Length: 402
Image (cartoon, rainbow, N blue to C red):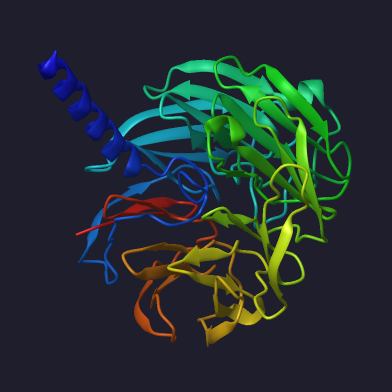
């Protein structure tokens, strides 16, 4: 009996360590953009600390995800971007493990900077969920075998955006949440991870929106809620039923997503607003609001009790996460930023549209410690797993590690 308990504890520790090193969705497992206990390199070059580089087909703005020893990315190709790709590489050496391809069933039109493969995929540790601007949802197992395929435009033909969709799906328990908000038939759906069937479907405000949903953890898994953003505010729903739990009225941004850390939600509204979710029938409590901390396209990053937000002109602002008080501002290279910054090992990693990576030391003053020119456009958010940074452009995927 004692040996059995020891074995089970060992397996639990092993499983926990593997899970902790994963990056299973946009901005990581918890949607914070922070990799705890990781320390990727802060300096690298074409000949140092680049473990591998692999070619990718077509185009892709979706960020990579990491499940154990697998790195997964999506791409789209063809004149109409109607060929959908899901690729899996070995994290150790970049070897291609498998490559699956599908035809789009929905509209693939998009802005020239975007493409069909803009949303970042997600995983529950057993399955991979690839979502595309065409509103196709593809579920594969970790070996690349198709589990189900759902063309949402078959059921909701008016769900589209001529500029392209960018909201990334998330997994909450056994439900996959997909947000497709636009100027026509605007919806959010909760899908059964095992079958792809609807658990629920909500009508959403009719206005283009590229934010991604987030999960706010409760005291128990049953108390978790999913936050959906729109121009009208924040709506919290139960992941499995879609039942509305609470709302926070505010004119939120249409591109940057909210972030939650330690039970506090940071909403891109009025610059940035920190709210405490309600308890019971209470209303959400505004802790602070700052017009100086204003994320424009990248989502805000909360790290080591500081808020980092990239505004217009490539200016990054750092503020106290508890009070919203501005600590410093720093002008990054260039003016256009699309990738959300990520953090680990006491550093913040920022990527400019032209492929310039910049590494800032996390602290009460601005300090640039490293930079690198990838020389290819980078518009997606990278992943951090273990002590490695995974970065992708349209044409390539890099692993940055010692």
